[in-house]
Image (cartoon, rainbow, N blue to C red; front, side, top):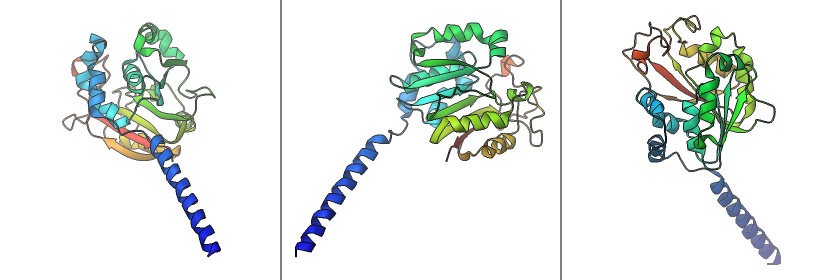
Length: 260
């Protein structure tokens, strides 16, 4: 009887600990993305007219839902450019999250210094840390355990820039925490073109991107269809500098990879 009583007390204690652990775990799991919240972020009255003009073609609310970025997360955008997506991420992770915005020094000197610096002066960007680094080595050693890394409409440009994409993707893998997401959006190239049209039509073949990223250790987790344009013949230059009147009309793949 005494042995039975001791065993029963031990079982109750163990069950209590297990339940407490489950409760703690449930608090650690973030709430699922709320589409209404993202729509409200995109509709914020302090967004610039220039950014709003891009929304129809970029579908930012759908992108934020796809990425699953929520308040408190630590995320990064590679090739942040003038900061259109970086600002959306800053809004999505506010008030306690953090965003790292990377741009290469060469492109900052040629095109991006003024628009990027001006963007960073906006109050909404107070949680954004500027990284002036090459894509081969995008993060300093202390940037790690990120929740997500985004690479929007620029992976194809790594061809013309002679980026070591294997090294780049491994660096992204190292900077993410287990379960972290690597989201890539880019203009679709025609089957069989590989990387050959990266600097001419500003497109890249989707299968090549998948293969390169999976070679770094990532697993493809999901695909987004919200930027697909089936009627796009994919034979024209998708760079907005060359085809401003067709901006937002290219077929674009949206891929989310996960670090196991």
